[in-house]
Image (cartoon, rainbow, N blue to C red; front, side, top):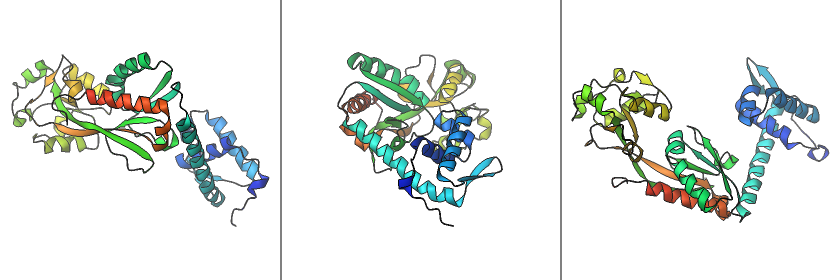
Length: 306
């Protein structure tokens, strides 16, 4: 039976609809509760209330997860469209604000959040004390269209047509280690001299290894006895002399406890992009933060930065 509802007769509660939408996208109440930052029982009550309100069953349990019923599948398209419309309304409202007071959410990786944003925020707080900043630190790209963040620092060019992006520069990523560790390796000068070195891996997929091999290093999986997905942890391990790591050259060169391993080796280049939603360009405070952060990121480029 096709799901049909007289929407004019329903007093629709967006909070319940959002609970349904995120539960459908996440596949379980527990995952949806984490995504929304609320207690699972509260979320469950909202979903149950929506089902009672509409008089239909929206989910059925499959193993430990939830699957949409035919009625739930049909409702999903309507609610998703409502969510996108709500996001556009929020973006438009934010974009029309000309106040230099208010909140701006910045999304960045932990390295950028730890080494770049503190200095930038110190300057921003002095020049524009009315702007409040929330920093979202994540290894995944925040969804700017859903307002998970207003401005994001990324290492790839966005493809979404409703996002605007400015390429800041290409960053040289270089190998670093403590002088004592390099001495134990015999003070290597050529890529072959690192054949027995220990590297701190930050990628379990093997792409990091492939990238280093492409740079001419004769390495295998045995050269990566330590793995962490945290760049901050990797960098601390490097500073403690555990092995060799790779990092943004402007950050690595500023650390007195380490030196470049094979300083003549060509760096691995990666881009830095600053991204925001297109509609936020009409907001004065977002424009201020975007332009000042872009200037800060450009200023951090050394003489060999692209």
